[in-house]
Length: 358
Ligand code: F6P
Ligand code: MN
Image 1 (cartoon, rainbow, N blue to C red):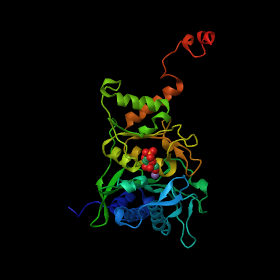
Image 2: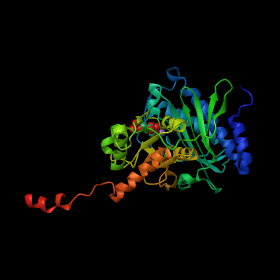
Image 3: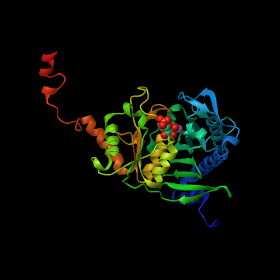
Image 4: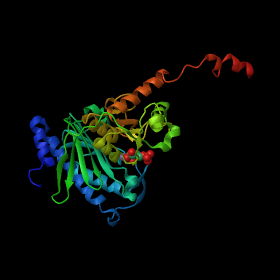
């Protein structure tokens, strides 16, 4: 049945009835959705498109850029700069915030985005996505960098697109998390997954286990217990997934539950995690929380972190509530020492016995 279905525009107009001030926000989300349709068309061409391959350049994170990283960044900027809705933008692919060009009027919102998340998967034809976060900019003056440094709790909207077998757009404007599927025949995003809800319990976890030797003890403890399965203290078998594309992992969790971890590790002491706070962790945290899940650094809610840099990284543990809360507890128990059995001082490294022998 093609007629009578709720399209993104209809959905946003209905949301506006609940919040009269949301008119400009709806218009902005329609612009973002238009950019996403453009990116979807481009990405789906695969090797037949003109933008396959890697560039010589690196982005501000020191990561080698794909041609598609640059082109999709451009699509987002061009589609969203002219509408008079934005005061500025921050992108994973841009060192500094993007200033709205002089010829266009400025609006009350800030847009932070990762134009092509998981782009290392492009060459192997695995799902990639676009992630975005919308903040308010109350002042009339053009935003300085500090204007973007707002905690995730101040987001007025967040979303991602996943370019998989179907292109989907998943958004929240603070009243639940809702999924739309792109109908390629009509060009409409159709509401197919209203009010997504993440089950509180799960038997599925996702983490890059090749980093195990760099993890902190609470993560090693949690994953070890999952791997021990039915014969371990969890008394159930767990399943593991790792797609290396955050949008695809979060999408799976929104569809059937699970826990995703990119925790703090010691691999590169200058990076307190892999994922970026403003345009990866915060928008995903809002979507997960609005669907009844939890999103944590391991030590507290992601959305309460006060940003200090537009490209800062953060540890991420998100998904089914009971598992995320368990992982937070393991961090607390580690920090208080409660997870270590009592060791007699006599057998301690610096004990009497030991110093006598040496
Ligand atoms: O943007 C970062 C990202 O590509 C995520 O989409 C993904 O979860 C992660 O990095 C993959 O990291 P790794 O290459 O360590 O598996
Ligand atoms: Mn990314």
